[in-house]
Length: 487
Ligand code: NAD
Image (cartoon, rainbow, N blue to C red; front, side, top):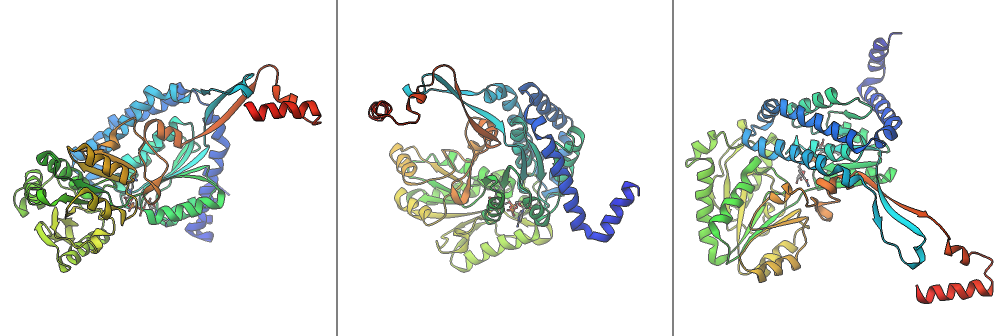
């Protein structure tokens, strides 16, 4: 039978699931066969691949803009800053430093090892799986792909099903630039992800919600695959009495409403010193008006304001706002919603009861609850009641308060007097703690996530250890005693 008839017959007789399993198996197998050929590649060969991607992105910049507009009305300027620039920055950084990253790192020995040399070699993990979310669909798929290529891996990529236009475009990129036995993309929802997770990948790099992160970690345990989990949660922002208020509101409003608040490191809620509370609320309202329009209609039609990704999330967010108001929160700005457009106005809430669901679950939308606090200690107490955050922000000019917050909390990353931009720093690791994730990405840390650090010891001359081999004669015991005592 012709192969095409074979494939159709498979589809008819076994159903789409089995056909998918078969295709997955064949791609997975092909990548496993290819993995050492790819892991042996030199820095120059990997850099050439990264340059090809860079050129492709350059040539398709307007296609990327269009895809993100189609997926959730993302403004072109935001796509440039938070999708394209992040990926091209990651590529350029890797191109510049890859030769150094790949070099074995010599490590010093002790007296016992004076006749040896020891080093750490970075070797590719092998065949890796990258599962990405929808909220920065280009950035959060391509970023890990860049690190995985730099580290010399083969990979299967599963983007989110909620951003089909961006996924289709990335599928085109991979198909044009890489053979399937090196990089293959599988589109689909959790069913496809579940099928993929059944395979014994050497590493799984997952970005998404903590709930699905748990499922991924459990699936990985079956094959003892290593995992990097880039998860989410509630990222607080503290504004103390000494904060420079104009600067603080400008940066918090940008961090909160960019991407329609659908960023894992968006400031989730604000804890503001009570003496500066009224000023903060008033300035935050003015800033939102300045960014997106000074009337409800202007904000709704603003081309600088994206949309909620799905009806489900729109309903969830509206529900959180309504419930908070029902429980006593006051609506300072926004609150209006239009389900047909998945529009939720930029919304500011004050007097939010701390037990309200909006103060418990990750908001992931354009709503900022503002809570007054008496002191940074009270703010820390509120943060401690929740899971460990992915990001924690603080606006302050008081070093003592900054130290109190840093030493009294934990978070994946922290900006003092800014929001979000630690994500863009090429030399900082990006990742969470426990609930908000484990492992890191970006730059060298991304390269490291996709590498195994192999310990290599080489013996050169005499081996003093041999003096302590059996039989354990009195002389050997004496030497061992000396070693135990003095080494
Ligand atoms: P999600 O967890 O629903 O989905 C992420 C990916 O997992 C998607 O590709 C999806 O198809 C897949 N998936 C869904 N259910 C699955 C299952 N049962 N088994 C296997 N795979 C499954 O997350 P999302 O809604 O796409 O993204 C929002 C979440 O991601 C938020 O919690 C946010 O904080 C987090 N996030 C974290 C980072 C980070 O870098 N730490 C970045 C962006 C988003």
